[in-house]
Length: 103
DNA sequence: AGACTGACATACC
DNA sequence: CGGTATGCCAGTC
Image (cartoon, rainbow, N blue to C red; front, side):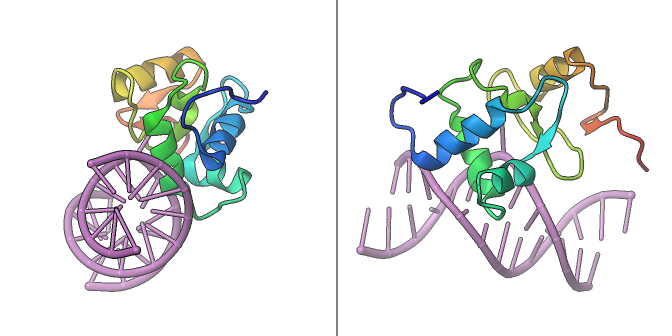
């Protein structure tokens, strides 16, 4: 499953790999994802990697959200696309927030 | 080689 | 509850 790609660093590779390993309908936060690759503090770097996202459809980057359940952002199409994709996975949204039971 | 940026997180006011 | 401030990490200019 090596990602035969262009200028992709080891770090990003891990990020994409971890993201690929996320099952459909599941949501992961940047911090959670960062933690999975061994960099619990690299949430920002993770977001950076996804923003470049050389493998847009290859990696379900739309399953990554903020720690508080906010959508965050999306490079392809924008947040609305991300929300749509997530809703398609069975997840509901309340504005820019994931509709979990919360406040 | 150095500085700035960015799809984050946490804490504080 | 909301906005502001600081910290962290890796990438790119």
